[in-house]
Image (cartoon, rainbow, N blue to C red; front, side, top):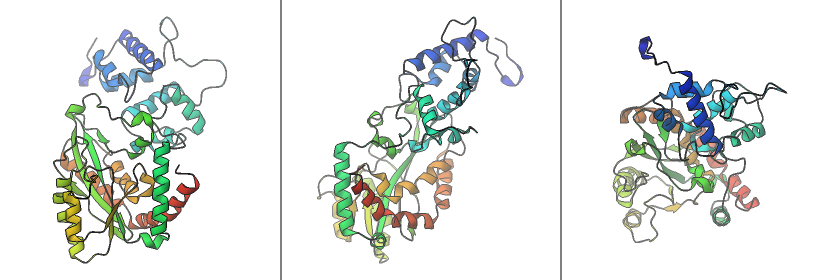
Length: 370
C-alpha cells in the first residue's frame, strides 16, 4: 500500500473487494445499517480505511469476474435500473448520517433529499430501499399507531374540540416543548429528538449507537402560539440521559425565569405542555403543580404520540435543519445554528398552524385516531 502526496492512502483492489464483499454479506442478512448489529463505520475501521475511502469503494461497480462473492453489478440485459447501485449507496449513506431528520420524509422525496437528481416514483424508491433490508427506518406513507394510541388521540381530539371548536379559541394557547442536539468527535450533528419515530414499533426502543458514549448534548425549550414566539431557552443538568427536563430543572430554569415574567406582565395565555417530558408527573402534588397553583398558571398536557396536534413540533424543524449545515465541535456553534434557524421561523407560519388545529382534530376523529 503506497502513500501519495497530501496524505492520500491508496488501497489495493483486494482491500476494495473485501470491503464490498463484507458489506454485501451483512446487508443481505439485514445486519448492516443504523440501529442494526453492524455499521458501515465498523466495517471501514476493521479494514483500516477511512470513511471517505470506504464509501468510495462502495460507490464503485462490483467486478463480475473473477470475484467469487455476490455481485451487485448491473445486469446488462433489459432496461437500465432507475435507481442504480451507486444511487442506493448514496441513499444508505444519508440514512447512516441521519440526513433524513425526524424520518418524516416521503418515499418519493428520498432521492432529492439525498442529493440525487433523478425522477422516480415513491413505489420504486420503497422497493429499492427494502432490498437494503430497511423497512420503517424511513416513515411509511401511513404513520403507524397502536390501537391504544388511536383511542387516546380520539378522546383528546373530542375533548379539545368541545373546549376549543374554532381557530380563534386556540389563540390563547402557547405550545411548549423541548428539543435536543448531539454531536460527536467528527463534528457531525444529530437531532436526538425524533418524535415521528415513536409511531413505529421498530423505533420505540432507544439503543445506544457505536461511539455514543462520547456524544455531547445540548437541550433547549421554547413555546409558540398565535402572534407569539418565545426565545430558545437552553437548560442544563437534565436528570435523564435523553435530556428531558425533570421537575426541579423545569421549575428553576423554565417556569420561574421564563414563564413567570409572562404572568407578571399580565399576559393572558394557557400553557400547553409535553405530557412525555420528565416534569409532567403522575400526581398533582409535585413541585411543578405547586408552582403553577401558586402563580395561577393555567395549563394542560398535549396528547401523547401526537406531534401533528401541536405547532411546536413543526417549529423545531428549522433549528434541526440549520444545525446540520456544517460540522460542529463546540456548544457555541450548535447554539448559533439553532438560534439562526429559530430566527428564520416566520410568525405567519405559526399562525397558520394554529388555525389548522381544529381541522386536524376533526380529521383525526374522521379517521378513528389514525
